[in-house]
Amino acid sequence: MCFCFHFRLLQFNLFNSTGKPGKPDSISLFDGDIYNITTTKIADVMVGTQNDKQLFRTVGPSLSVKLFANGASAVHGFIAEIVTLPISAIGFGMQ
Image (cartoon, rainbow, N blue to C red; front, side, top):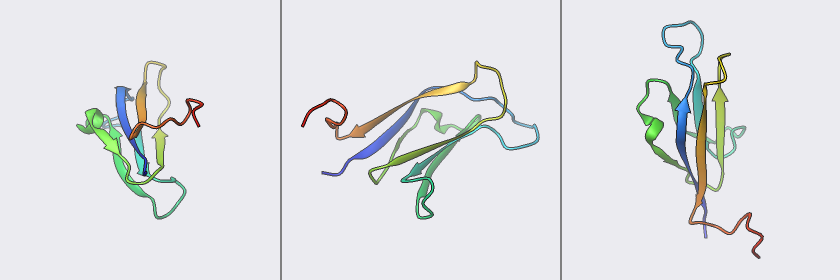
């Protein structure tokens, strides 16, 4: 049985640096290990993109999440839900 991961943002409030110099705040999702050169990028989620309500899915059995954030106040950030599908017993103490 092959497991894959699903990533969904529940709350999304990154700093809006549109029009300012430098790289904007972003969340990058990778299908696999972020430090592996063969890993494919699933998506970049930034302020102003329409994919912050989308469900992202890996093909392989691992997911990497990379956050780039400029200095901003404590009201900025995100909350995400990451689940395996099909639902597994991993972490529930079942054998």
